[in-house]
Image: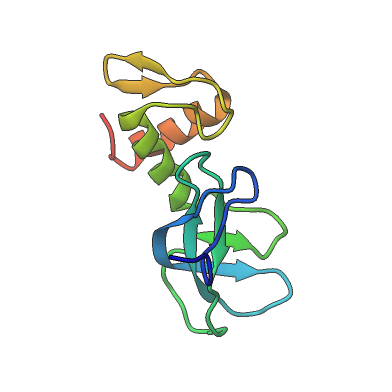
Length: 127
């Protein structure tokens, strides 16, 4: 199988895989919303948004990515990445350090890991 139409990680050269189709995105310079697909590198964890659809204006649900103000709002993807790496181990997707094995799965001591972990607790995804 060739690479035509595939997304390749610019950091490590692996073919990226779909994490979630139809994430909702707000972009600066536009008044409406877009749906796109979230891809992730299976090796290093780098994520990208691709496959944007047409702009739409009526939406009352959760916005996964908000670039309207020039800053990224924490999206579902960070919690999903946390939940995955917590189970499988490897290197921390946020800082790159080797994850340590603990009583409730793998963990990292970096600030980003801890803030995403707190969000997962608040959302009731982990005990």
